[in-house]
View 1 (spheres, rainbow over the protein chains, first blue to last red):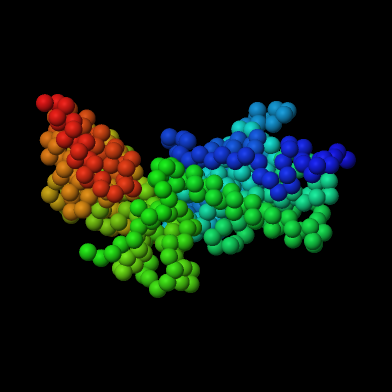
View 2: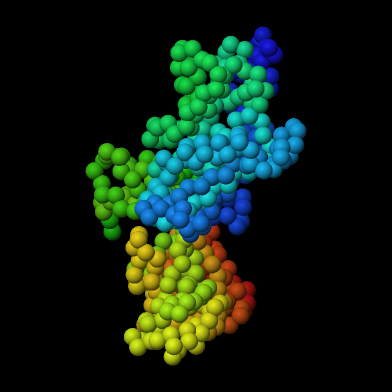
Length: 241
Length: 228
């Protein structure tokens, strides 16, 4: 097995075990979308567009009491090392569903009956943890579209590489490591909306990974909030007017 | 003047704790109040509300809107009112109760592509909005220029008791008709329309700032000085 953490305790990209990758979030990057955002999380680059609420087509999908949330996670053919065929793969279809289910609890869909809200995630460059970055960016784009939300959603992964618990795994750590556990939370309501675990963790490792991932989510939430504040209120002091 | 505390908020943010009445764009969990939209939270003795800075247009009964005819059937027109629903304008409400599709063609009144100024007479969760053009000033829009802003910012453009809109109208010699759905019609001289467009865009981008009417007034008077 490849050694993923050196004797100084640094990971292959030079991070400490509890260190996040550099994060950048922008709001309102697409003119024609109702809401949009762009996230860079390490080497991940994702654009998210939100359209809606709008009329549902095909009409039979519409629900009489609430809106239908539809998500499409798609990786651009040039987003990976070897070309990825552009048609939706099994993996992309599954991630689309997982992202939809992670976002749904946060949205007050009952406010928009008989409508649809479309979320399109386009991965321009992928480097592990793109579903987490995608969820984080989608929540920002939904807030930008002005859809009523109970809370933001923010996601981050924790996992295990070379016997140590680490957060925010990159592509190599995800593939070579022993475990990967993406989670998404609603930070103010303190609720979990996504929980996956690929690999094996002992109960102690799990506790530690879970706590680290939640702390990381809270850090990312601050960045989300700052991005929205900068867009809507300029660089003005946050708080009292 | 009641005391109002204001705060910039994003969705999920805790606005206040305690015994308040929640009004719009706020959810209550036990005695904590959270915002559901990006906007300006107002805490006063009347309750807590968030004035959103973004969001779709959701029709309300009695709203005056500007819409575009996109289709028609034997009995009604379909109108795009910049919302998630298409609105209907029934032929009976235009031609009268006696209307029969055999005798009269809907195209005589409005054809596809026409802009109309109309009132929402019925809307709820279960049905699409129904419009009416009976009323003073309502009906087909014959001329003018149209500018779009975010529907969430329309109240700001109108201002307290129409103060903002009056300021812009008197400075530009234009007549402004505001649709609650964020579509604004301007009728007047070409340079007035250009100036009014600038002022409206300024209101949109600075909607969250205090003292906006004053800023707009100084912007307009500065322009006038430059002209003279």
